[in-house]
Image (cartoon, rainbow, N blue to C red):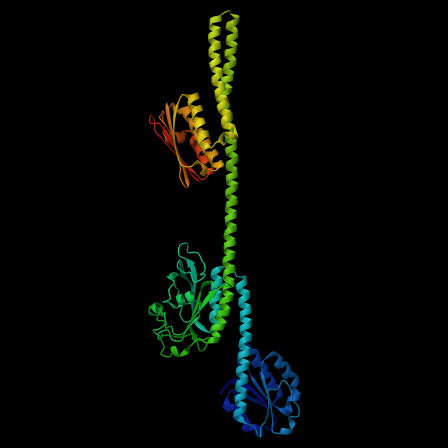
Length: 568
């Protein structure tokens, strides 16, 4: 029996062809006979409009003597639809020309019926195959267009699953993607190196059961069908999942079937390979259906009879689709990486803007600090020196020579002290103070501090100072300098211990004094110094610029310890 629809047009003397019509009715699923040309053409047009997606090529039988009256309509129809045209006649002499649109001429009084039916069967199969390939090509074009334009990875994977099921008439499908074991980022397997890789179950669809499956991660082993596919890079085709040969490396995991009542029979697992042969994942198709649009009730006894095996054609289709999917997936992941990179650049730009503002604020605060240092130190000393010079002049004018000499001697000491103070200030401002290295610069600074303040400094250093870049050395120097300045102004200390340690990735500094100390919490409430002024809070500002941390520990009568921790 030919699985086709046929239309037959005969003249008024239909009885003349009854034997021929009976033969066709016996061998064709559906045949309609007409004697009116208009009804005949209307029926064909109606069929064509309602069955634009059918795979079965309709067969049109026309009595030869009637053909030329409707040949224009038939030719137009054949351009739109891939029909099979057969002309028949009871008069052999009528077939006096060969039309290229005609599949077969039949002399109804003398023909080989078996030969005709077999020839029609082969032609129907050929046309169905051509129609299938044409639809497949159209489907691939639409799929490729959709895959290339989709930027959302999950939507992309959903499209791949849906397309795979549609092209192979599958009841269910899943996608597993290769991920890195440590980072869980999507990756690929190159040169069969899957030691540090896993498979992530990402998406699944089932047309017969509405089941939501949780995402899970599976080790890559040859014991599972999808694992075997990823390791070998080979397509795996299974006709009966519950009757696998014991010689095979893989087995069907029936946990899903036991949990849901589903019955897995036929399986097709296809590796998703990129153009270099690296494996990105696997598409696993389950239960190819005999009737594509039918929903299978797995509780019924005949459920398994509706499932057929995947064939070589399905394998070819899916290998092609998997190639498209690999390109689309790679492009999608690349797009996501580029987007993340762009977002990272945006964050870095924001951080740089914030850092620039902090640097500007730090420069402004540095200028204020220098102004205060000059105002509180050399400026006041110079004013004091000026007043004492005036005093010496008056003593000299009053002939109080002895007192004048004493004052001048005292004035000389004050000038030396002011000179030392100015030199120290200039040394700290001079950019070349770090040329000999931060350790040498700190030792010089400590010597100067001891000379000007009378406070004893003990310096302990461990590590390799060459690991510290110039900008970091400058920051550390300024922070230690600021700590010494705070000690000089407020601590009333006699001894200071500075511990400076450099490790592979960190710098640790502690500045401890035996001064009067203070209540850190109370002081933070009262003073702006601890909240971002340029006292102790200035240390925190500097530390933040280099992603470091500062901790201040103190108590009344117990001295103060400033701990600095900065990454290299």
